[in-house]
Image 1: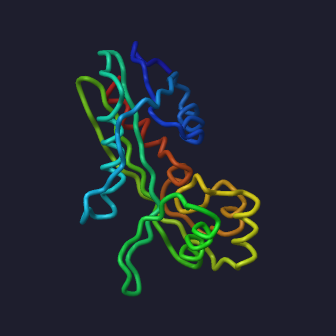
Image 2: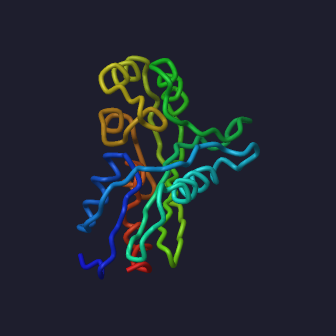
Length: 198
């Protein structure tokens, strides 16, 4: 695709985001240099946390942008919505196998949200947007949970799962919204919003 002389920088170490951005047939470089420290002010609504993280990563990029550069940052979170008297909960990356099992038990038989915030920034313009996908899991057995954790070791994945792996194949009964957003990058929306920068 013709980028009209613009250079796109993906400020993410996620191999899944790199692969999905490649699917747009645009040239880009990866640069993860960043001074941003992830922290969330107390009382922040849980659905606003990805926005804070994405914009923080953009602002914390390690150098000023040149006039022909476009920076893309993103943050994806798995969110259990409020239910049965419980408040909303963000499921981050599990600390260990026990924590991963707890998260998968929480997801079992329930609907959850996957929200990605993306910030696209140049010297002239900044645009942050979010994409949310609703995901339903069937009730998962303890054997299924243990097999997935032991075999796939999903410790680098928010919510302790990846939709494109075994647990997604056997456990997810329905999604509403972008599949690619659940993988980690809502590429159709990225393409749409990128047009304003080219």
